[in-house]
Length: 77
Image: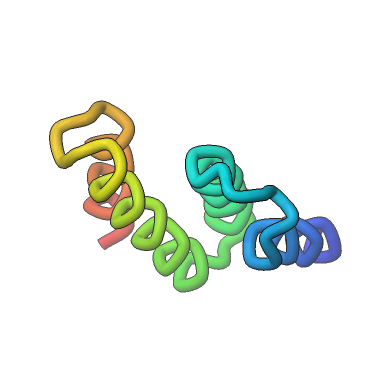
């Protein structure tokens, strides 16, 4: 699983997903879910914070996806 996560992180950070911010954000969200389920809580938290900030900027603070990210942050603390 760690090998797969390494490839996912590369795809997210390298720009291979293109300029589509929504696609990159959703991919990061899925990556975060894998980290969390594997017990990598600190790494998962930093990724979900990145997703939350991106969603807040692009979708707005009251969008359901932004609120989902906020709720996930709250559950992690």
